[in-house]
Image (cartoon, rainbow, N blue to C red; front, side, top):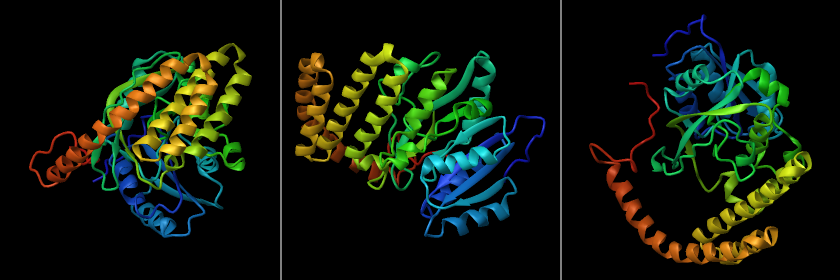
Length: 340
């Protein structure tokens, strides 16, 4: 049962962009509604869906007066979030993609972190667990600890990991101008989150809740399954940052090399060696001074892939066994979305 909101507490606006999300939206909205912090307004933006997304969101709105459904013609995730920003009334804004999940204590923990942080803190993020299509955890290893002035750290990559992990001052979001829809218009969508976080980091400090409070769903249909477009998106953002921060061009180039190498590893894991080598070439050409280091890492990645295949087969067996276990371990358990 949803706890009644305490009107003496600050309002948090939760923005849920949704495009053809009928398979996952119910689980996402259930995890938001189950938050221990109840003073929420939940704005679902139907981004021109052709499936049952709108009807599903409307059913949830009829059951929970905190939910409002907005509709736009398909214009991409940035435009959908911006519509939610314009319609929001909260002192804080939180974004959750329509296939991700929240731990019930996410918003409460992040508001506590805001209270403990200095007045110059504008964003609080948390760690994320990677989950599969069934909401089963398969990775929690990435746990960044960056906080404070994180601008130069963001040049090396989006350590927040996704668009569902942040709670941000609403006034700061509006000062930034929301999310940049130029990426969608240019056909290079994918790094909208990173560009937004960079623009926030230009103006405010970040704080961290050291807990895995987001279930980030990774599937073949996600944006990251198109690495060539992801690299074009990264280069769009990198050009923007190099123009605005010429004193940090070296850091931006290093970030580009690192990102291209990340995509190299992604393609190697998929067994797609020809495109993998193109990304490795991009990494080497971006920072020639890093060539020996990157080449050594590439050799290690290839050797590691052989070991990874064996581990992944064993891990998948463990996950399947854990699905029916009484007390599954870290891998194989479902991501927690219900308050205890």
